[in-house]
Length: 196
Length: 199
Length: 185
Image (tube, rainbow over all chains, first blue to last red; front, side, top):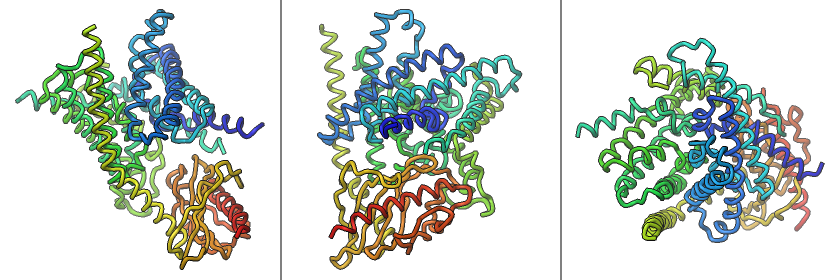
C-alpha cells in the first residue's frame, strides 16, 4: 500500500477511535448529552454534524491557505471560522426545508444547535493546524464525524436500556449518564497504541 | 436592586450552568486537570461572558431580530480572540496547556445561550448580574473538579506537592473517564442537597 | 427593502467595530508573542546544546524523506566563537499517544549533547516521564555510532517501552540526518 493511503487510514482510525473527539478529547459534549436520549435522534444528529463538519472543514481550509496565511490575518481566524459554520448551517437548513421537508421537520431544533457544536469549530482548527492537505482534511473530518456518531449512538443505546433499570434517586437523569460515559471512555482507552 | 442579587445567585446555584443547565461542559472536562488551568479558564469565560453580555444587552434595541445570531457571534468571537491573543502574549505556558479550548470559548454554550436567552432581552445591569453569576458558578464548579483531579491524579495542588511522595497518583483522575465520573457525582450531590430540577 | 438595508447596516457596523478592535489588539500583542516564541526557542536550543553561544537556522528541503520514521522539522547550526560546533535537529515522530516533537543536539565530534521533548501526548505518569531529566541525561555523551535501541543501550522507562522506543528512533533519525549533513563542508 502506498504511503499516502496508509497515512489516510491512520488518520481515519485515530480520528474515529483512538482520539475519539468526545470520549478522548471531550469536545462536542453539549449535543452529546442533550441529544443522545434515543438512537434515532443520535443517528440523525450524527449525519447532520457530519455534513456540516466536512463542508466547513473544506471551506475553512481553503480560506486559511489562500486568504489568511498570505495576508497575515491569522488573528481573525476565530471570528471568520465560526461565521462560516453559521452560514453553512443556515444554508443546510434552507436546502433541507425546501428539498427534504420531512427530514427538516424530524431534525427540528438540532440544526441551529449545530452552529455551537464545539466539535465542528475544533475540527476546522485542527484541519489547518495539523498541516493536512485537502484530501487529508476531508478524510479527517469524515472520520471525526464517524467517531462522534458512534459515541453518540453507543450512549443512546445505553440510555434506552437505563430507562428500565433501577437507578438510585439522586443519580437519576444526568448523573448516571455521565457515569455511563465514564465507562465508555474507559473502553475507548483500549484503542490507545493502536496507531503506530 | 434586589433583582440584581437574585440573578447573580441564580447563576451560581439555582441555574448553575454546568451542574444544572448542562451547558459549557466541553471546556470543563478537558481543562480541569490542573487547578491553575481551571482558574485561567474560569477567568477567560467570565471575561468573555461579562463583556459580551454587556455589549449585547446595550445593543439589544438596535439589532434587527433576523441578524441577531451573526451579531452575537461577532461580538463573542471578538472578546474570545482578545483573550486568546493576550494569553499568548503574557501567559504563554497556560495558553499552550489549554490549547484549543481558549478559542473554543466562542462556542461555549453558556455564552451563546445566555446571550440569546437573557442578555438580548434584559437591561445591562441585569445582564451583567446574570453574566457574573454564571461566570462565577462556572469557575466554582470547574475548580471543584480540578482540585479533586489534581490532588488524586498528581498528588499536588497548584503544582505544590500535597500528598506524600509515595502517593503515585490515580491515573483514572487524569484521564477522561475520571472527569466524566466526577461530574456525575457532583450533579448527584447537588441534586441531593439543593433539590432536583425536572429533567 | 428598508428592512434589508437596516439589517445590512447593523451587521456591517458591528463587523467593522469588531475588525478594528481586533486589529488593534493584534497589533499590540504581536510583538510580545513573537518575542516569547523566539525566547522559548532560544532557551530550548540552549538546554540541548549548552556549549553553543548562538544558533542559526539552516534550510531543510520541505519534502525530505523520513528517516527511521522520523521527520526533520528544522535544523539549527550551533555556533561558538564564530565556528560551527554542531547542530540541533527538531524532529517529529509518532509516540504511544500521538505526535512527539523533540530537539536533538549533536556535536561536530559526533557525540550527543542533549535532547529535549517539546511536544508529546504520552500517558501522564508513565510515558510522560520522557521529559524527566533522569531519563534524558542518559543520552548526553552518546556517540552517533551507538545503536540507540531501547532496553539495549537506552534504559527504558518501566511500563513505557513504546514511548522510550519513540524517543530512541527520533534520535536515530536525527543522527541519520546529521551524518548526511556532516558530509557537506
